[in-house]
Image (cartoon, rainbow, N blue to C red; front, top):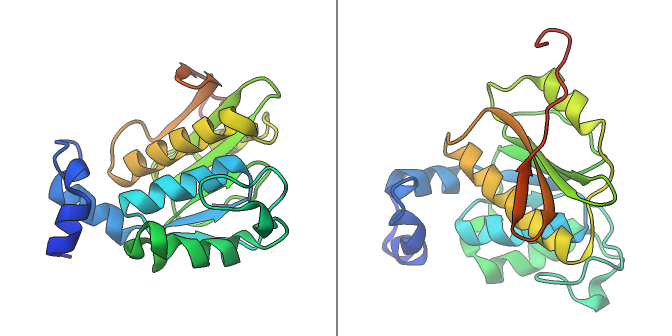
Length: 203
């Protein structure tokens, strides 16, 4: 697909990055992300992915009391994430409202299927965690690693985790970085490597 003039203006800061460029921006627009969950981490990821040009589709998870933030108001608690995002994402970026087949970004616990990239957002009650898999990454090692984690944090750490998750998802869409990996988020701006749990074939 060729970028329209309005898209070149909208995404100019990303296009100027040598890692992205015009072709990378086209790839982001042609991809898609299915989001599962309705906490601050997933909703923050939705805002960043949509702003960057990745079409976003959400599940019918119900918005809880921790959801209000970038995209959700307190009055929308109790509604489905899919309904609310369908209403607010056109204001963020009209390019993000035509979901296409794509990867999955989900808060744990979650089921995993479909095409990569897969990005899991979880935690261990102290830190946030991002576990990711590109199309060539081992499904079983990904599964073994996410099984060790609980739900993602809320509050400011959840917001920071969603931001990191969106960045990782975009990098995988662009074919950048490792095909399988995991990171701890110990505080906003403090990211460290997490050891992957290896399956019996990869040990």
